[in-house]
Length: 448
Image: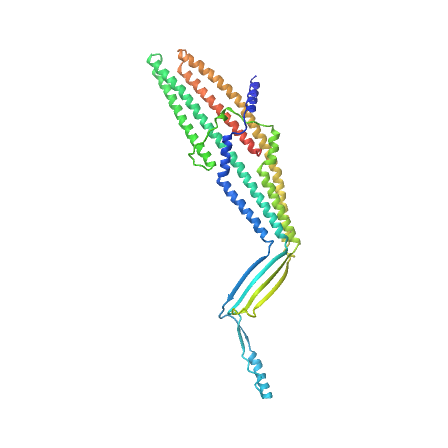
């Protein structure tokens, strides 16, 4: 019969209540918009987009303007004794021809570093065939997808943390409410005890015992309010607000439970939506793009065309100094100790590592979903017992309180009954919010 009652409670709660609070969802959206970690990740995405643009720029010609002017003094010189070689011959020729048609020549002593020399040119380079460029563009695109997966993971973790913090905040409010209700009951009992003491029905120690119970409860209320303030501060921290900002409480949650589907639904959702899979698959695609780049680079050359045009000479006298050089080049690495082959094998091994990690992650996710699903079911079952505990402790308190007012029970019995009732209510409150926390954990491991 007890089991049937628990199943009935489970069915009624889970069939009549929504799966998410509109207030909580609003706070989640606010956190996703304002969280500083996500803002940093958005900047990383912009940076990755620029990396693609940089890679694409290599498809276009590169044009550069490079003027330079040199002044030099000292240093090595080129000495050539052309005068010593030719002047005797020229003298002999002048004597034979009786003319001065062959003048004397000075020896040459030329400074090797060019002085008053300029080279003003435009350089043009264009890649005719370069497989590295297109493969690098593909690689940068996969890196961008990896950044998107990272952002999704951050959003996923933030959403879960906000839900947890909100439920903790609501539970702390509920605890304060339960303590304060218990305090009202104790105040009524104290007022009654004062009347009974005045009528000489009870002794002074009963009044003192009741006042001590009230003081202990006041300490518990102070502790509960401290926990509430800390829970509020942490929640505001997650959504990037002032720590003292008031938090709107969805009081309907305390009387509601989430809607839950079958276990297989959550397992399948985890395989399809968990951001860890996106990160692993993105890593595999990055490795594949890198492998394509390495394989093409190992087999194919790079062909380019270019030209240099401008002016070159001593002094900036552009007349007669123009020149033009056209180039057609090929760059082909033929051998370097099998370096490229080893890099290719290394990339293949990295891909295999990711394949193994993918299988391991699938098994972990399946186990996590099963664990959180069973924990949620256990919490729901505990709720039935907690409700039964409240009913019993309430009846016990009502009976003992009635007997005490009629002089048929001692105060210790009333105090114990009231404390048991308060603990039962706190336990039920903890279990209710624990159900929401367990449900949030289940959504997290299933990627919802």
